[in-house]
Amino acid sequence: MMKKALVALLLLVSLVGYAQTKLYLKGNIVTSPILLEQVEDQVWQSEVTLDDSRVFLFSDKYVFFEADEPSYKSNNIRINGGTYTVRFDMKNKAWSFTAPVDANRISAFGSSVCNGTGASGNKGYAYLYGEQLKSRFNSNDSQTPFYVSGIAIGGNTTNDLLNRYAEMTRDHARYVIIGLSMGNEGIHGAADQQKIFNQFANNMQLLIRKIKADGKIPVVMNNYTRADYTDQDYSYIKQMNLLIHSWDVSSVNTLGAIDDGKGHWATGYKDDDFHPTTAGHQEFLYAMTPSLFDAIASGKSQPVRNTTAAMQLGQGDVVSFQGEGTVHPFTISLRVKGGNAGRLLTLKATRGTREANLSVNADGKVVYTSMYNDQMTVDAPINDDQWHTITLTHYYAQRRVLLYVDNKSVEATERINTQFAAIVGDSTSQVSRQFSELFFWRSAFCPEEVEQLTAGKMLKSSLELYVPMVAADQLENKAMSLNTVNFVSKQTTGIRPAVKTIAPTRRYDLSGRAVNTKQKGIIVQNGRKYVL
Image (tube, rainbow, N blue to C red; front, side, top):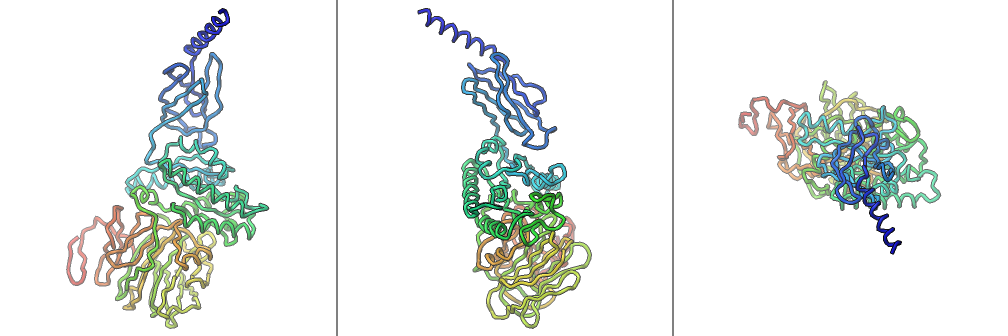
């Protein structure tokens, strides 16, 4: 009997003790200790606001729970600033930080490069992209105030991201950028590189499935260079990137941004063996489509190739486009039939009078003429009445331009260091030829990518424009961006958009230069006058 009474007394003391316990939330992103409200026995819950304005890196941010009597202190918990409903269960030592999903928030979930290592102040590509998104919203180029929330930690692998997956979910973002590399996975020096390759691919697919299952939308940064990669390492990196191109998810071609052509950092872009400089991070930024998340939010689907499209373009009619924002590395590809002499593509500087072009010469061969009038020719005639894939790829960091006719190429040392408008077709003559597909990527292509493209594969990483050329009024961009192309009739002194889109449209004059859409005036089309 006395034993039962003693147990009851101890239980009562315990209950009274917890009833009087004060539980605080503390940490380096808590301005001052927050006293939590006890809502039931051994359970506390309050709404709290965490201020991380003084701590930049996610890995340095933390909070913890601490009680006085009975004494208790939890482990540090990594979390970003924001307003949360925090709940703590003392009996089970369980806690949660809940908040509504933020439809404008993009979590950057990855390793050191995603965390900005190598860039000044750790303000790498993820941070820079966030700044670009803010700028787009402020200038009305985007209707949505997207922003980037960093949750990357140096050295992380796919297994690390799976193990700390809860840190991503409590960032409460609608979108997730996955920024990892096979370098951290251990591809360099591995006894069984195929095993590492498979592990990375399988875990990435698992992460993508989990993120989608949680109602979020993933975007994948593909694999980039390292100073210590061997030819075999480089081969696996390129194979993985080809695989990522094919996944049902938007992705970014970082390899084509600052690769030296051998799997290493281009000269001047290496901070250390494993990380790019600030300028290198800037090149990664330029490989990211500015309106990517606008396109995702609009409900666009991943593009699928349409190789049956065919449109006759001639009599001076052309199709015009311009990349969004600043363009450094890029690839433009056209699928064409017809070997008559004349222009295929013109790159016209948006400032000044310089231009580069692709043309077919009298022998039916494709010639590239640079903005400095240097020329190179691919010894592969296209005057055989067959479809051919013409690809121009530009490595800004390498100062290198390559021209492919199908899989045959020539190259030159050149940096196109001016922004340009692209004009498909020949506005200078009456020559006519068929066009099937127009591609524009914000990154350069390696030979393996060109080979896959020529074989009919869809390559989605950094793809800003994909237009099956069906007809003048059906030139719809299927890529994950809100950019558009414009059909320009020789009979017209102005430019009309090929299709109506929900995005703000650009307009250009015949020289490819942007014009003021609010400007009044007239255009003449097919002999008829229209007042703007």
